Image 1 (cartoon, helix red, strand yellow):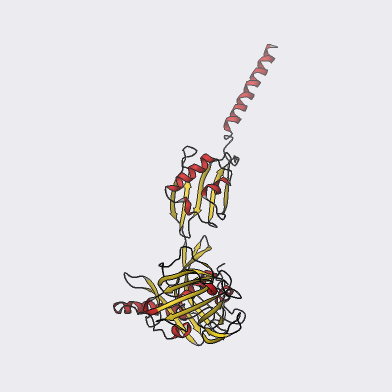
Image 2: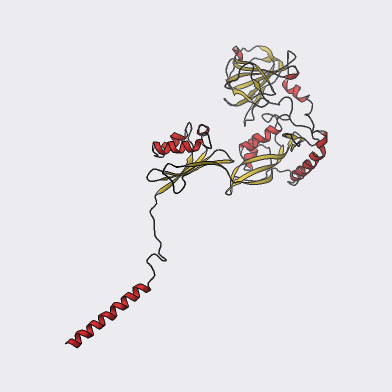
Length: 421
C-alpha cells in the first residue's frame, strides 16, 4: 500500500510541473489581443447660428458655466469673441462628463482659432492660438459665353460651375467700361485666369483674378492685374492704362436681373402723373434691397427723405460733378451729410419710396449745376492713368504672360466646363 501511495504522489507532482510549464510558456493575456476602450467623448461639428455668441454656442452643447467661462477666457488671449460670425464652421470635442478637450472656429478662409486642453492639466486649463489654414493654390484659365439660355454673367458663370462671387469680382474689373446690368447681349464671351484655393481636396475660396477678357458688342476688353513696386495692385488694359474710371458706368452693385426701364430724356410721360416732363436720370429696375453704390469718390451732401424722391442720397465729387440716388428703401447706417465715401462703397438699397410704382433706382448726374445724361458723360470719359513710365517694361512682361494664358484657351468658348463645386 505504501508503494502504491508513493506512486500516486509522484504522478501528481509530475502533472503539476507540466501545468506550470504550460502556463509559463503561454504569452501574456494582452499580447496580440485588442482591448476595446469605451468612448468617453464626442466630436461635434456645425456652423455658427445667426445672432449667436461664443457663450450661447457653447451652452447649446450642454457645457457648464465654468467650462464656458474657461473657453471664453482662453479665446480672449488670441481672438475677440465678439467677432464671432454667423455661418462660420466650428468643431469641438466634448467629454461625456462635460469638459472640452479642444475647440476650433474658422475665423475666415485663412485663419483658425484653436483652443486645447494640455495633457496633463486641470479640467479648465485651456490654451488658445490663431493658426493659418493650410490651403493649396491653383491657377486655371476658364471661359464662357452669353446666349439665350445664359443671358447674364451670373448664369453663364453658373453654367461652367463657377460661383456668384467670381461673377461679381469679374464685373467689378470692367465696371468702368461695361454696365453688366444692361450691356451684355447674346454672342458676348469671356475668359479669365483665376486663382482658387483648395483644402483637403475641396474648394476653399477664390483668390485673385490675374487677367480677364470680355468680348462685348464686337469689342474686346482685356485686363491685367499688375502691382508697381511699392504700389497697390490694379487692373490695366493692354496698353497699360488703368481700367478705373472717374465714374462707374452703373450705380448698382452687380445683381443678376436689373433692367434699364427709363433713360435720360427732356420729355417723358410720367408713369404716375400721366403728363410729359423731363426725366433727368436713368431708372434701373432691380429687386427690393439690391445694393446701391457711389459712382465716384466724394462727400455726402444730403442723406434722408426728400418728398417724391423718397429716401435719397446726394453726393459731391471733384470736377463739378454731383450724383443723386432716389427712391431707396434704406440708406446705409451712419451715412449723413459730410460723410466721405469711396467709389463702389454701398450707400443704400433699392426701394420704391416716394413717388414710385415699383422697386427701382433713379440715378442722376449733375455737372456744374446742370443735369446731364450719365450714359453719354461716361462714354466721353478719358482712359484711366497709365502704368508709371519706369515700370512699363515690367508691366509688358506680366501682360504678355497673362495674355498667353488667355489665348491658350482657344477657340473662344461657347461653353467651357470647369466645375469646382
